[in-house]
Figure: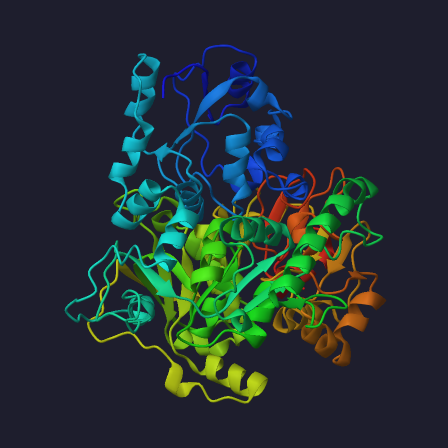
Length: 638
């Protein structure tokens, strides 16, 4: 590659960014690079409804980034290289973020570090990338840089995929018996943590061989046998297009362990959604939904959603309710798939190409992560929630600044353990695993504890005590963090990133106009109960809107029976059907002009909820208390 176009430096100074877009040479003196350029900034949730091809998405690349970039600025500006800072590609598993780069004419991505899913999506889709900033200088000096050589710095499996021409082509060769494991399968045993044990026993040994190896270590890249695999309307069309282009209508591997979910678009038509949002999103969203429904019919995949054969709800909640089991390897095309890690499972999000590969082969590529063990003790005293704990953890410099990372392709997982977990149920604990991805981590997993056994026994009538995966004595960890809940404050995430932690006491003068109690981290029965306990006997403050969205049909039914949803309605809250909704700007609760939002969702990137306006992430109890007072409020003060 020779530099025939321009280099776009994503600095954190909007004026300098604007100058580059206007054709000026970049002024980088004293400038810092934007931290955590996220996939919502790369391609918005609204643009994602339009399709998944480069020609459709290219014009929308980085639209509204720093409230500066306009539609088609990057493509028409002739930019060939984009340069970012740390945590590039934070957020969603949407592979269309890579596609948008390609559609905008970007041929190389340079950043100080990449987030795991985005990096994998670049490998599998053939987008060259590097953390070596020296490449920028070489290009500027006129050198013809061999981009294929960049793959030489990648680990063996990534390198094999790049040399084969992408993951789909690699899958075809694997199915034909032309490739075997890129890793040693005869290994000496070693003490392992929970995730390592699940990976080791699921590792593919080659055609005709039983799965499982004696051990794995951080940095190894292996193919793992999957259990449940899932997708939703945003991603299913792209997944199945990739699948059919490579394999036609060949049968999926164990289709009974596959499901599709109509959950991300089901609330766009709600009458409280701003008309501009409905007008922009509803039509194209329904086309993507139709693609998913048709694919499910062709391949015999079970379909969840309103009026569908299987019950509606947010996919992550339904996986916990109906599919996940201890020891499973679980993947969905959504970054919040770690929710199912609450079940003592290894659950993580993947892109569309990786999912198409998994649907056909039954395997998923895994870079064995480093594991941080978080041991929880102390008493939550009925007020401190897992939301407070996870915001406190991922905002710590160790995670925010990725001190665990020693190489560009490192990944990291949190193993939650300790007696402090037993005071919360699976609903509440799932917030911990769900939001690990917001800390730049691959996933979280809960070590064996009583709430998991009780939940599955009550939900499915099954005793899973014997399925639980325990860490070995002497297992290795990147770090062991001991957390005493008595020392954790009620915590919020300030606008822009979930890692922007602050004690609630430092933000209790912030006025709130919009309260959202919803999503896979805030719409469980436990969440609704916590909010109702605060609101009961009180009134919603004048000028505050409240939206409540249960996370599944079962949650809605139980909350209705307990009088929780009637309580919200009587207070004037908007109570919607189950769905993903406002978390991604597709339902009630989209911020109106001038509003500041307190939300129980898991992500507060700029415009993530469908409109400009600051979003604070809070627990359900804090959300409810804030609805009562009209400002961020500690419920104990009521």
